[in-house]
Amino acid sequence: MSQFDTTAPFYAAYRPGIPQEAVELLAQRVAGKQHRALLDLGSGTGQVPLALARKVTEIDVVEQDAGMLGEADKALAGLPVTVRLHNTSAEQFTPAAFYRANLVTICRAFHWMDQDVVLSRLEGMTAQDATVAVMGDGSLWTARTAWTDALRVLIQEYLGEERRAGKDKTYAAHNRPYREILAESAFGQVEEHTIAVEREWTTDTVIGYLYSTSFAARPLFGEQVDDFERRARALLDEHTAADGLIEHASFQVVLGRRG
Image (cartoon, rainbow, N blue to C red; front, side, top):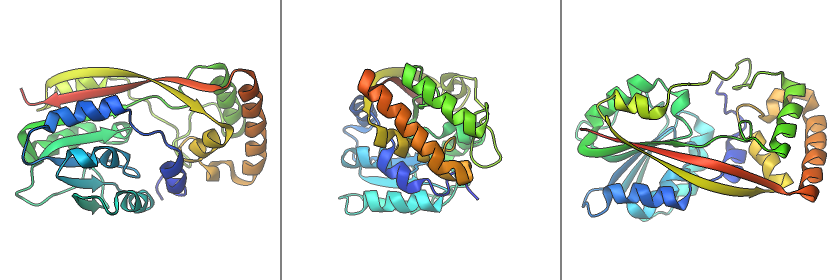
């Protein structure tokens, strides 16, 4: 069973997309090329391919969770580009022998992967001048504001002090910066961009977001889920009335190319 079982519809509806500044940054890497093949690994519900769809000529979506891939299929239906869906992991994805991606994106998913294996396999399926982009931001678990702190304490009351990563698992943080990991790979010519993002949440969107995560998915609460949601809504409504539900996030884009 995947840690994302039951979360896919919430993920599709409530996860923040990628900032427009990041979209333009990625688009620049393939601008002017006749062939602009995007390979998105750990795609989730297809947010990155959807944002880049008009900047590329073909898209390969790789996602091991069938529910997530189904949501991506719906989101990407009808686009004026070739879209291929692959229900497999980033580590096991094997394209046709002639395939070469011009842009590889991994957004909010690199920490789940065997990073060295993925980067090594990408050597044989990317164009010589391809860019590998590892992207992400924090979550409402890691955000530090009065309302997110209070929310995290409430989640911990139900699920324990340690951050959960699905059923019977806790989250193992990766402490090495992604720029260092990319620098040691074939894509060692690295640059990093940090994009400031301000998000305004509502009680409903926060609850939906929580249910999209591996640390606060509905099944983790068991029979207490209704009680948790009632208390979470009361807490969020109180903070909305006081100062609003504002999150200041940093969206990081780490770009690697062959030297």
